[in-house]
Amino acid sequence: MATYKLSQDEITKFSQDGYFIVKGLFDDEEISILRTAIETDSNLKEKLYNRFDASGRKTNMATWNHPGDSVYGLAARSRRVVDTIEALLGGEIYHYHSKLTAKEPYEGGAWEWHQDYGYWYHNGIVFPHMASVMVALDQTNEKNGCLQIVKGSHLCGRIEHGVLEGEQVGADARRVEEILNLMPIEHIELEPGDGVFFHCNSLHRSDQ
Image 1 (cartoon, helix red, strand yellow):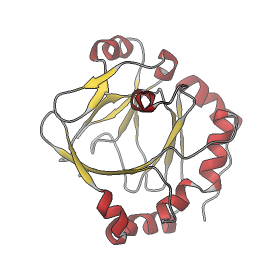
Image 2 (spheres, helix red, strand yellow):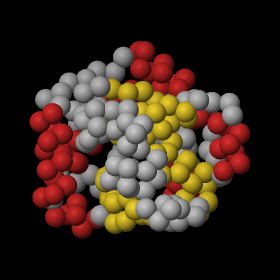
Image 3 (cartoon, rainbow, N blue to C red):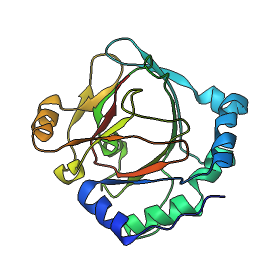
Image 4 (cartoon, rainbow, N blue to C red):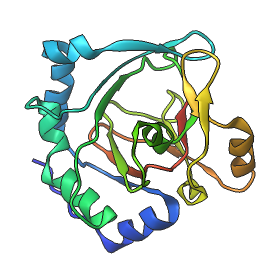
């Protein structure tokens, strides 16, 4: 089992940049179990649906609110995840939702610039006192459409979101353009088992 303890440098990076990467957050055996569950967990399969981008390319995804007793629920409740988020946010946390994104490399749909809080705000979440963790099940890099985060963009606050071409909801394009003129885009390249913790107001996207 992989072990991990948050460092002060990572807390500082989260505060300044809005994200940080943890290499080997989950080990090879754990990732193998999580990947197998995609094929064998009937409850997970029932939750899968398609979301299309502006070019008509699709991404398979599933979202659920209750963590449940599946291996994904256990991963979300693991001490290395819970303790880290509690330290970053400064108190007891709760599980808002989980999401599985199954995107075919080079062929799957892109995700436009958005903030997670851009959605959650409209679900009655008053304060942007939330964070996400993404765990890579496969290698992700710039060539196959890895996650991109605008460094420091969480400091810009919540941006208005609206329906974009296709089926996605994204951040206001004019405000995004202004931010991109001031802040750099970081490509989050990960190996299986690596994780990235990021603030709910961090602007992020991915290419196809």
